[in-house]
Image (tube, rainbow, N blue to C red; front, side):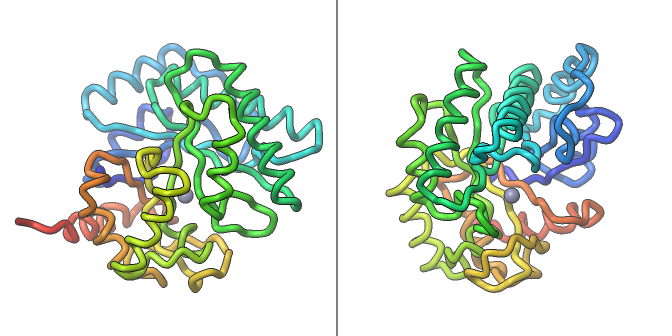
Length: 277
Ligand SMILES: [Zn+2]
């Protein structure tokens, strides 16, 4: 696994790479714009060039995380169009920056089936607005908080089965969300069983990246509270399994915990879990 962290883009998107280097990261995740706002100033040509130059200089692969405001499961016409426009804009930024994956939360709706169909239709619309893009949407498994969908593998499989271009979709597995959703990855046996279920439903080859978060709350709580790796209810075993899993040697895995000042320490901890031969 290429272990890294979600890095700040303060000063411009290209500045994230130097922060990742400081943290001893082998990859990074960024927001391409403010994740708590709908719109943002356009990405300038200068920023685009600086980002690509930093990507080349450091050799670090990156993924992007989309806005938290988006809900592709919404039936409200205004919120729906805003969501479609926002994801389209973010995917366009990824395409210009050379970022392969844009991680998004699938969406929320009180009616599971209806919500999943609305999400699939929304993805189809985004694909139509971005033909021939190399940048891909990466649907993140969620903790299942409130009406949020995407906390069961079958939810993701259902969306994939309904979209016209499932070849353009990847999946992001967040360890905290998995555990909060009831997937017990805290033991070796549990880890293997969860990965086997993921494989038969969505396919492990579809996993584009991991979010490496421990969980503050118990198994199956359906509450999304990230904890630093090794300090939460999941414990170290799941992370030891992940960083040593030969299926994910070249897969990006990033920390998303609230304390960037401790990213370096957490990355060193994860690196120390690698089995040496
Ligand atoms: Zn996440």
